[in-house]
Image (tube, rainbow, N blue to C red):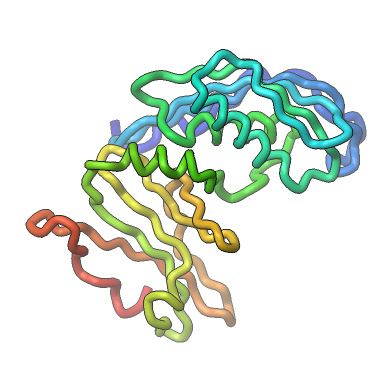
Amino acid sequence: MAGDCAAGIRIQPGRAFRHAKDDATAEIIRIMTTFRLLRQTNRSSRFAEVTVEVKPSKRPDVEVTATATAEHRREADLGARWALRGLSEAAKVTVTDVVITQIDTSTGDVYEATAHAVWQALRIEHRAPYVGFSDPEMVASWLNDMAGRRLDAVTEARHWYDGRREPDAESLLHAWLYFEYTMPVGLHGVGDQLMPAKEDPYRSYDMDDYGKQGLARRYIRTSCPGSLGPGLPTAP
């Protein structure tokens, strides 16, 4: 099936989560909501459905009561904690249900669905441009999932100025890895951490007087596994 079939369907929105007209300062009330992460492309598919209950609390707190494997319970806990970061009002999240499939659910799906469920309850849109993970166990699990898969291509985002760019390390901003039969995985640097995130590359864009962010893709040569195809063009 070409293209996306669906990308994040929100269901059971529940009651309004805040009282006042201004969402940034309104009082938090209790709510239960479900978020379904559902995506299918011609490369692979993703699925996870997570239900959370969010209520006021003196400090940020997460409890997972859903019946799930230890791995998915951990992902749910970490995803909820990621979503609660930096909020002006503390809240407690209880993850009450986690639904997965053996075929379509892989590392990071429950994590991302949980984060979106919390943001949905809080009525926060696009709290972060991506939902990445840096937990060592999750990264190790993702690497284990990728073991043995062919790396088909790499997309790079680089900074260009006046038609030129700095050498590789200096100009590289982000990269996306295309392993066979999987979603693209973006690599984001956050401080000293490298956070993988299942996402499509963004588009090239101008930064006015500061140059341009340009994207280009390199393909793996099938005749010589592990080597990259032709280099990046001279300008984006």
